[in-house]
Amino acid sequence: MQKIVNACDFSYFCSVAAPDAPEGRLQTMCDWGNWVFPFDDMFDSGHLRSDLETSRQVLGSLMSNMLGKGCDIGTKLPVVQVHDDIFRRLSEVGLTYAGVQRRLAKSMELYAEGVARHVETFTSHRIPSLQDMLQTRRLSVGVAPLYHLVEYAHSLQLPDEVFEDPAIQALERLGADFVILSNDILSYRKEESEGCPFNMVAASQMNGNSAQEAFDIVGSLLEESYIEWDEVISRMPCWDVDVDSEVERYIKGIQNVVQANIGWSFHLKKDLGADGPQVRKTWRIDVLVNPPYLSNPGEADY
Image (spheres, helix red, strand yellow):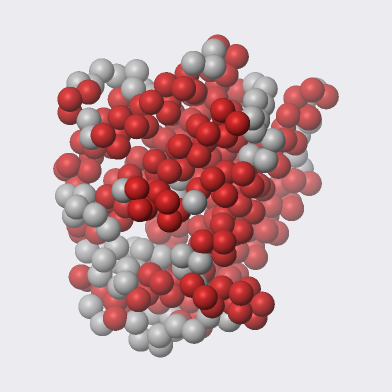
């Protein structure tokens, strides 16, 4: 696990996402990032990806403290206990930030739902449609919790009504889509080599498109998302002056998360290796015409 955490260098991501955070809150945010990758790996490529029943038990234990439900600590994995400690730190900041705690808990509940769907897809050997995969990835990608960790790290003061507004909800969804679509373009070659088609580009190919068509489709979805972002910003409602100022900071936080993800992907060289600078310059990626997972999609590693 230590090797995974060190390789992730999530402090780089958090420093871009929450540049104005004081040290203590930035540390809590970094701890969450260092927690989520080894936790997620258990379901992506570890022993839980083919065990839906145990996955649901682990996810239930993860959510128990956040939802105020009792759970014997002896039944919790150490990695779940780590998250309990992170959430405890957020809870200690007082009633002023009770909304942040509720929103983080809700976003984690949706994340857990997405992870469970991921495992269910793997165990059922079902080929998801592009839209089905996008819906699941919006939950399991873990972007929404980051919004509220930035909210916490930057000590934002926002009433609940802001988060109930359709425009804010649309920006949150679009921020997740930016991360998902750009990630799946940049990470496709690595995941292709691992035979892992839980990727929007791979899903497009499994639904009958060529490699170039698949990249074009995902690229078009990304372009459409940027156009929609501008449209939503143009109709953003107004509250009072103080709230509007905090809303601007929250929206900037969403943008920072997206920018952090792009910069972090190239910084780590985890997906493109030494080819990263060339890909960034040319925006061209060499991939297989017929990747292995297309030959037997029913047994692919989702």
